[in-house]
Length: 155
Image 1 (cartoon, one colour):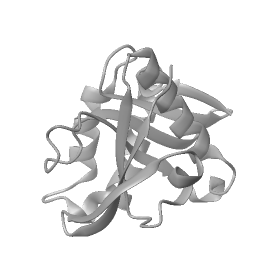
Image 2 (cartoon, one colour):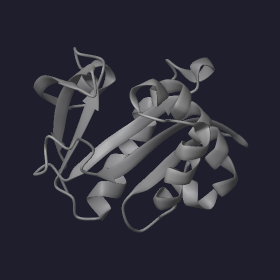
Image 3 (cartoon, one colour):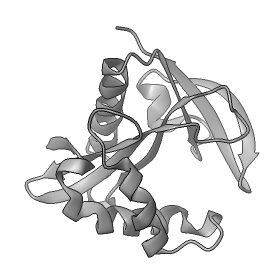
Image 4 (tube, one colour):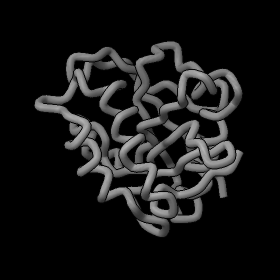
C-alpha cells in the first residue's frame, strides 16, 4: 500500500467526492457529488492545510483521509482536525484506516501541530481509541451523535 497526497493524484478527486457524498451527503444541505468535488479543490495541497491523503493498492484508491481546520463550528478553539477517513468496503479490516490516520498524524507533526481532534460516529472510539486517541465528549452535531476525540502529537 502506498499513501500519497490527493494533489499528486488529482484524477482520483471524482471518486473521493462520490465516496464522501455516499457516506455523508445526507447530513449536508443541498449536497451533490459535484458540490463535494468542487469543495475538494481546496484540499489539493502537499505542504499546507487543508489536505487529503489517499491510500493506493497499485493504481486502485482504497482509502482517503483529511487534515483540516476547524471541522466543528461548536469548537472554534480546536483548530486542527483529522476528518473524512473513508476506506472502500472491500478493504476494511486490513489496517488501511490505521495507515491513513498515522499518515495524517505524521504530516500534522511535520507542520508543527501539537494536537489533533476528530469526530466519529463510533461512540466507543473504534479504531481511534486503539491507536491512542482520547475521548473528550459525546455531542449531537448536524443531527448526528458523535464522539469527539483528541490526540497529543509527540515530536
